[in-house]
Image 1 (cartoon, rainbow, N blue to C red):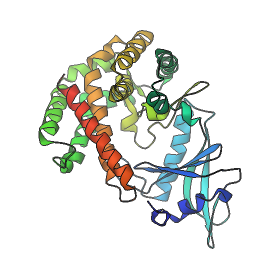
Image 2: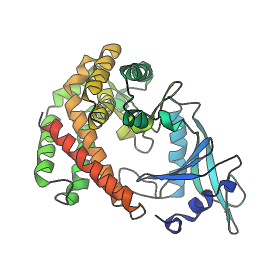
Image 3: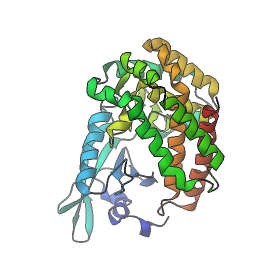
Image 4: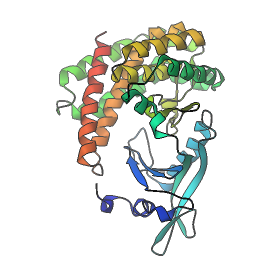
Length: 337
């Protein structure tokens, strides 16, 4: 996309001179909900003013609150990475970080992690090993043990509450059926499978009784993991509690599904096996296929949403649609057993 299609403050922040530190060649990365600027040793993340229902960044106050939540929640796993809340200020014809004038945007400042050690890069290079997953499990087990729990959070683990998240996905993607990425047959098979599992209230009640509903990460997959000097797990869900208050099995299923997506089924199985053993949670296997299916479908949905954003370039759009088709295929495979 051209710079002219970007918000004016993002255009201004593409200039290395806009930063109070050496910024090198500033690079912009976009998701369906964020503008992310890579500037020297730091990263600046700004939320797009979007409202998807399950996520509402439509006002400046809401974006500020979610930035504050992002800092608070991600410091559970990455306190040294999440630095501060920043403002973008507008005065005259200029935009400045933490500068004079009217605050027109809020963002999160982070330490830039080594890109070559991002888990996605490690996977692409064919270098992911069991040792990496052992290190990951060693971080995750104590994280979930300490994660907040209680009656209010456990309500999100009931079949009824989980159904809200799962069925919402089908409602939001119905208009995309037979658009070349999601066939009607696949849509019906996945939704029928999910509804069948959701009817088994006993499965979900058992997980609640086992104490496995926690304030989790919510977005645990390779795009949010860095395998550097230590394991960094970042970018948790801050914008909606019902996606973060969940069964630990749902979090674990996301990364297991992601490894399946990258055609690493043996490492996927190893990761789940090691986590189940180290956490003393063999019960997670009972709902693992269901949550894998759910997570794959969510990633497919996000691919459709991102491809539909008029601000993304054609290369990104094509890649998102191709990825979405693969995710829906994967979800269908889990549904078919």
